[in-house]
Every structure is written in C-alpha cells, then in structure tokens.
Length: 154
Image 1 (cartoon, rainbow, N blue to C red):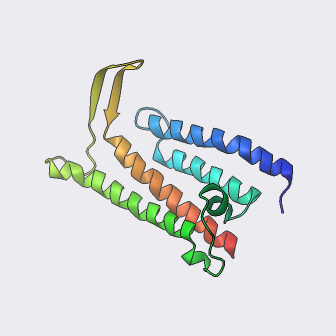
Image 2 (cartoon, rainbow, N blue to C red):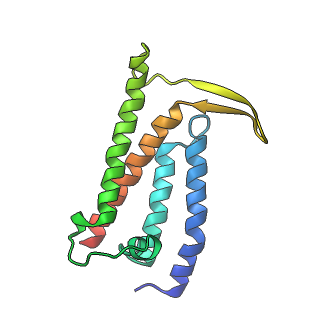
C-alpha cells in the first residue's frame, strides 16, 4: 500500500519526467542525450507508477483493459509488450547499421539533411542517427521494464 501523497506526487512528476525523456532523446544526435538516457528516464517514470500503484495499474486504469488474474507474470500483456519493444528496438538498431552497407558505406554510417523553410524553426536537421537512437531507446525501455516487471511480480 502506498500513500495518497506518493500517488499525487507520481501524477505530477511522471509527465515531467516523460517530457524530459523525449527532449533528451530528440537532442541526442547533436548534444548529450539520446536513446539510452531517454529510455532510462522513461523507465524511471514507469517504475514510479509501479511503486505508487502496481503492475496492473497501467493496463486496467490507463489502457482500460481487463487484467487476466490467472496469467503468470511472463504471460502478462504488459510484459509481452515490453519484450516486443526490446525485439523491435534490436531490429531497428540492426537495420540502421545495415542501411549504410546497402548504399555502399561502412556499417553504422550516419548522414543528415537540412530542411529549410519550416515555420517557426526555419531550419531543421534530420539525422539518420535518430533512427539508431530510437532503436536504443526501445531496447533500453523494453529490457529494463521486462526485468522490473518480472522481479516485482516475484
């Protein structure tokens, strides 16, 4: 059982942590940040939710789905979703590395383009490193949340 103070604090801090994690993820190819630290902060937000509520809270209250009470932790839908995120992240990381080979460059070669004339921002740099960072982000979130979910259910 957690207190109302803990649950209220989590409701205030989780959105802030998630916005910060997205910001760090998006700036990672130019400045400190990226998929790893963005994934760690996202995982921290989920862990705070698990501590304040429980493993089934996201599925029952946020996603509005029935929780299967007889399922083992390995068969839990959220744990399955975390494992899928991990596998998808590995595929994205591998695909971003192989993309350079397909065009005749070395493995993990990155490139970028500048988009001009964008309202408000005027000039945006799109880097292929963002795809690699997305894969790292998914691997970090999927792996850590799988471990946390299984260990906390035990």
